[in-house]
Length: 261
Image (tube, rainbow, N blue to C red; front, side, top):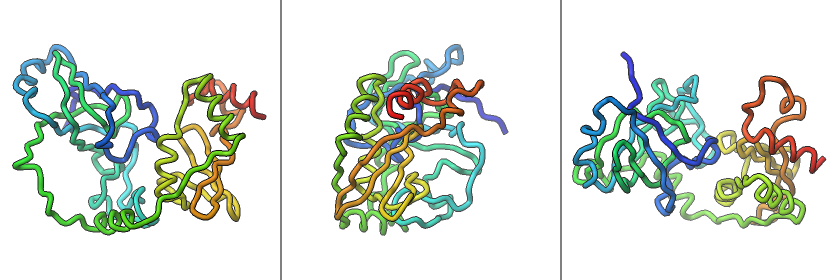
């Protein structure tokens, strides 16, 4: 059995941390799916423009292994059977995403919010048909329990110390790097230690969150997350080692280390 991609996702997300676990319905972002030329895909796309949504079947090409009981990011730190989750770590790492279809122009599909990173191979595209694909009264299993708990749970406030604000502003102004949207969203829901959410407890009231190649340190005060400082995720030795030029945000991390020693 052999699969060949029909195209690739083109979006602004290079890191898995930047990508939501599911597409955000209230987002105005646009992305593209570019199909391969010289394979009659222009004919295959005929009549698709009349559909409001499409299913995108993709291949999680960054995953090299699978886990029979992954740790879902939502809810308590409890492992679940992979076939009862949307985890990308699957025996056959096939992704299934329902996205708004905004336009079809030649071999380029403009779509709405995606939960995929740039360069993800696309295996197939199918129209979403609400009279067939929607079952709004279906039971949600363990996810229903988690969603009910989240609905009734408090949201944590986010406060940023003056020092951390200077660091974040420096990253934004000097390098155009801003990971706070995704980080603060996750922390406001649940800042407790969790492997999949990349939150680690460092001390009695000191926590570290991995945000792609960056690290965010915080503590808790009542129902508020206090962001204390930011740090790079790689050591100076790793950043400067030959062959590590492809480390994400490498130059920015080197400059950050020189600025905030």
